[in-house]
Image (cartoon, rainbow, N blue to C red; front, top):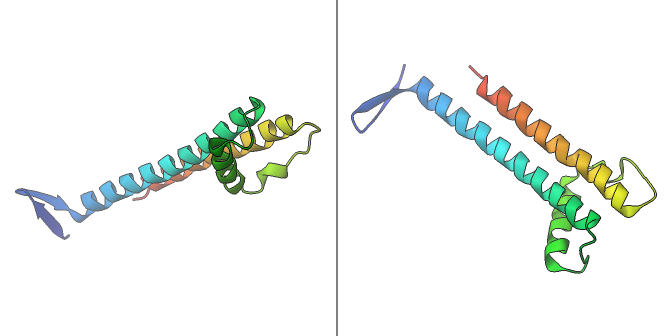
Length: 110
């Protein structure tokens, strides 16, 4: 078993690998959480009636369109606000679930 020395403390390769996997799992969960927050912000801005020509609204909307991954037209209710609430809300939930599952699976690696 190889060992790394740092500051007089010897760290085994297994400990280094476990720590690296922990960091990766945290990063995956963080990215998925940010995606869900962007989608939720788009829902709030749309349902709240934010000015669609505002720079912030445009920025969030463009990222939300990308992050929706095909969910944006899953259901086609009559109103635009209802459509955004349902479809982008489902996409946000998807990202939260993916983040939790992927992070959990990574942390369980031997």
